[in-house]
Length: 309
Image (cartoon, rainbow, N blue to C red):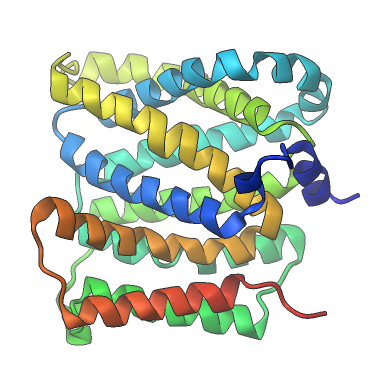
C-alpha cells in the first residue's frame, strides 16, 4: 500500500465530504482567500510572528481535545517518522505563514496574488524532484489555462498592465514562502498513515513551538499587539478558518488526488478573493471577471481530473 493509500485509509471514509476532494480543496481556497484579506488588514496592527504564533497556538488548543485519543493511538507511527513530521511542521505551519504575514507588511495584495498563481508550477517542480512525478500534457494545459484566467481577473482584462507592476522586498519574501509551502504540499504525501486530527494537532503544536524563539525576539524588537476587539476577531478567524478548517480539507484533498492535481486549486484563491471584494468592498462585476472565472474553472477541471489509464 502506498503512502497516499495509507493516508486515505486512515481518514474517516464514512463521512461523505471526506471523500469529495474538489469540494474540500474549494473550501480550502475560500478560507485562504479570506486569510489574505485579513492578513493584509492586520499588517501594522499585529506583528507577523505574533500573528502566526498565536494563530497556530489557538488552532492547536482548538484541535487538541478532539485529537487527543487519535494522537495517543498514532504516536508510534508519528515517532517512526518524527523527522519528517517536524519538517512538515516547520515548512507548512511555522515558516510559510510567518513569511506570508511579513510579506503583507511590504507588498500589495495584487502582487501576492500574481505570485501565488505560480504555485502549481512550483509544486510540479517539487513533485518531480522528490517523487519523480511529472505533469502530464493535460495537467500542464489546465494549469496554464487557469493561470490565464487569474491574470485576466487581476489585470482587469488588460494584459499590458503587466509592464506596470513592480516587485519589492515583500514580493521576494512571499515567493520564498510559496516555495516552502509547495514543498510542504508534496511532502504531505510521505506522512505516516495517521488520523487527520493527529496530523493537525502535531503539526500545529510543533509549528507554534518552533516560532517561540522568533516570538521572544519580536516582543523585544517591536510594539506588542493591542488586545482590542478587531485584533481578537482577527485571531479568532485565522485560528478557525484558514488554519483548522482549511488545513484539514487541504491535507485530505491532497491525500485523495495527489499534489499535482490539487495544486491548480491555488488558482481558485484569487477568484474567491475577487468575489469577496465584490461583496465586502462593493466592487461591481465586469465582463473580465466572468471571462476569468470561466478560464480558471475550466483549467482547474482539466488539470485536476483523473487521467484515463
